[in-house]
Image (cartoon, rainbow, N blue to C red; front, side, top):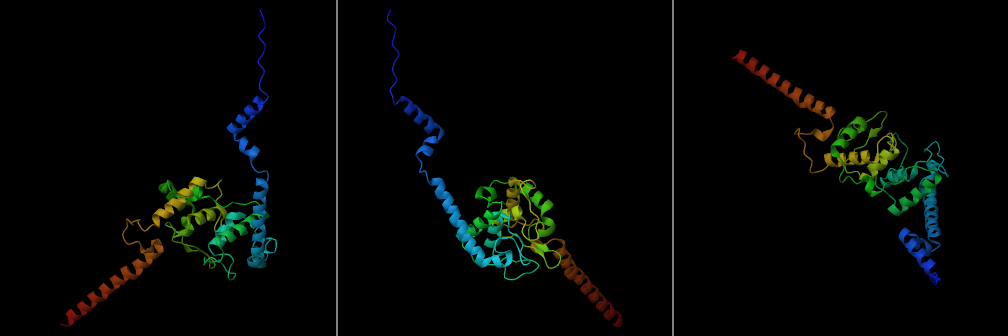
Length: 269
């Protein structure tokens, strides 16, 4: 019997198999992608950092130092991260108009593109919290009840149980959380601005933060109802006690004066 001769493979068969394997693993795009794509991304980031450095030199260096190392007028920005820059600048707290016990929120003077450039420069000085994505701070589908419990445990001591804000010591205060962008609430928990402690993911997880944002959105919504009737600004026992003293005790005094006057008139007659 004649031995069957082995079939000879086509010279391009190995190439075809390799291309199929690359396509299945996504490597085909990498193989044929522009070689300078990574370099282009790196160049764009470098340009953002350069532009941010220019903005920093004009608006921030006088207080925070030419290299972000800090001065007697402003703390070091090394390691605060992009999230801190986005929060402070987007809410208008920075640049500060003047030093004080606390820098208030005011109208923002930078565009979002400029804020991103400033954030890129500060982030280049040292690793820190990054700007959160919408998926991280979007309250849709979060657990409002769990958020309320977390807020009352960790935040209500300063911000009041519905986020109305409150006074602290030596001229400081916890600002109201009404109408605050969810992204900025998330960034505040990440970075701990001014008098506020930070709540990293090891303390409050990403889900915990989202639950808290959902709770604040619910209690400060125009659609939310107060089951206790007149909420007196939602400021808690201070406003309620003041209301009781002025109107409650004042009403009792008025009634006592009226009774005394009626008694004296009756005796004279």
